[in-house]
Length: 580
Image 1 (cartoon, rainbow, N blue to C red):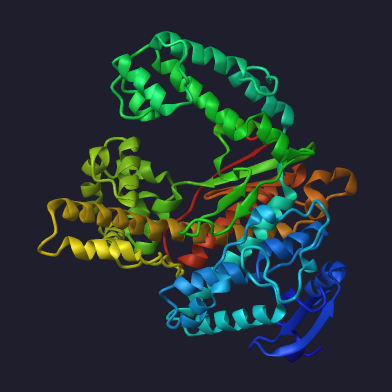
Image 2: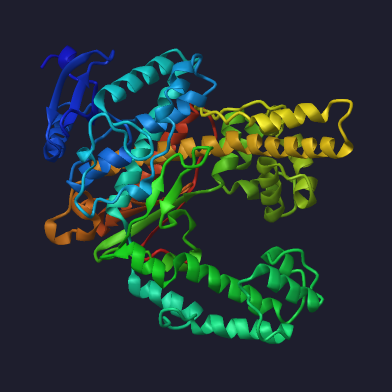
């Protein structure tokens, strides 16, 4: 095969008669070869092409196609998820002509990941070739090829194609990683989880009965409020009982309750914490989500409008700290955990090229660096001030510190202030690589216009100003949070490739519950915005830690070449994840 005949892309889609279709394209998108195969042969065909030429694999959506390959023991190096990329390109301000993408409405519908149940052995290839899968995204090969051509044209004609290509690659890599994280699972100690639940809630109760310690907490609240029949799970009734006890709160939120010194407050806060733990991660959760020593959540790349991940099942992004000790490596393996110190503020410093802010965080805790610079007296003040700058805090401690930050870090503050002003005017903003915020809804625009008509009431004007400020806070944070998500995806992608080069361990040292792909090699096991956990054989743990560091450095250089901003990591190697 000559270099001209080597495929740069391989598009996968539904063929005819329930078969799968593979179409190889050259670098310019011209067809080289195409074949239809039976679904059971797909993994072998992908593995053969991946080994020979390692093309970039193009498919309608990664959860449908790649998850089945991983289950069969096959991985690919690079992908292009048409659904994920469609969403980015149809909104991106970098795309000069997005009309064709916006008219392709079939590609707008999200995948319902809850439908992805492969345990019953059924396949999605049983649908007729003209059908679209649940969620509206077509699988037909011609539809996939047409959408791919639209996307390549949009990127090629963009105002900054190189940045968009980085974003497309990172987003698609995230799709691969999410499927692999689900397949490998998080090592989970059921006995430890049960111990933590028993410690907080009491022994596992009989079905339909509350745990003993929740019963005790509830009884203490009722006694303190003088209401033996009070339902603590009914906010209106609880609020009335608190008012009768002269606890004049407007809600039952923690921050309001802690303002009062009353015998009911401590057991009520304890009950609310116990109730959350039981509902979100109690025994029912344990029975549903943890099997054979693995917790396998469903990650949703790009599930948040800024590009952050969400989860569609299992709540991977909301695991409480008190349950972290249940994350336990297999025997002979280790958990290599790393999180980035102050990721969003560092991204802001790099985006804005604010040298003073970069210097404040160089090689050390950024908040402590702000204290050392004499801007505030304590690290907590620095943290509150920076978060206020990122999220639009204008009152309290944030309101006092933010003006000082404007004087000391003018470039960084100008970037977020400018993004807020754009949002307040109804404009859109974009991340570093080109993901753009959604335009305001027509009702918002109409309300803003109406508020400044002569006949508008003062109430209408105030509501419009408040709505404009809310949108400004959203766009202020969008540019930073979205760019931080891009940095994190770049970090993950580089780390994934590095771990893929590790030598597999001997079969007797394997971790079988991690599945056919990851049982014998270090692999990603968890991701949460600015944190990763790698499950690695003990003798590869130090190498995995170094790979994590190197990937973080590479992500910084890739997105911000020449920037002095560093991204230091808090890194640990343990058998069990610590609680805090």
